[in-house]
Length: 381
Image (cartoon, rainbow, N blue to C red; front, side, top):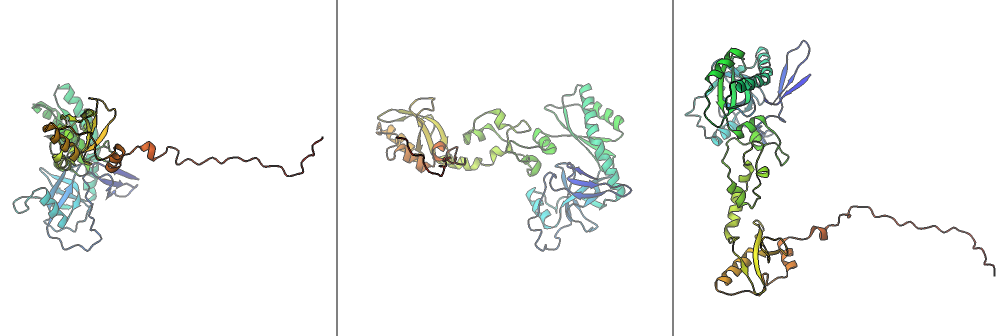
């Protein structure tokens, strides 16, 4: 019988009267790493440092001081304080050097804990028992927090592999005195207690989920460090300031608002202010919307109205603004092109005109009446 433990990224196969076997499940492991050069002969190991993954997004680096032959997905027992912990190998060899450089860790100046051994069957059994206790422990802890009226939220609980210690991840807006809580938890579960505060983004990464794009959350699949996101990122990209659309699963602004921010910031450099009104001989034109990447601004002769929108290239807008400063009014807003030619140049068109809704429907065949073969009856005169 197979059982997937997505919080650790492994699949446990249990059979009657036999030891449990474990293999890595890359489909559900958070912050999973794939070696695209795995089919190419690898150079000899350049470092004895190994990356180990524990529950959800928690990873750490350890030294393989005994030179165990390790591969990705191996379950190992590592040094902890106190006792030992159980994790799975995610990176070895030259990829570890790449990861260390990315997270700005100097292996020469950093002291790493040791890998004790490959996990034995007894280690794995105790580890699985500890994992089975985590959910009930979290639910019970939330009840205790509510009874103590503490302004904090328990987001996750992670047991150490030897069942001697548990880390309680919590979220709190203010400083919380949880000394009484630690005493109660230690008496309740008979383990060492460690409280670790995390933010809303870190909680979303640990729990995981599906974003509005339909893909796995970035914070649980590849983001390691979180950069602050402001509403200015949405303004630069001309996005609607709708909190429901801009907020992610964590309730904060989506991290992906920063992905294309630099591109939009560079593209906006030649754009004039949207508050400037364009004056022509026939009317005044007011800005309505902007397509930054296409370099187009849309104007209407009526303020705050989307009637009779006219697309204008940015260069033409700047030309009209400079002419207005000299008290010169151009004849028309779009002088050198007709509106339909500008739209064709810009790349806009009517979807109704281009594609018919019935273009994929099968054409109905006209039924023709078959004439009966035979002689006509003579007319009686």
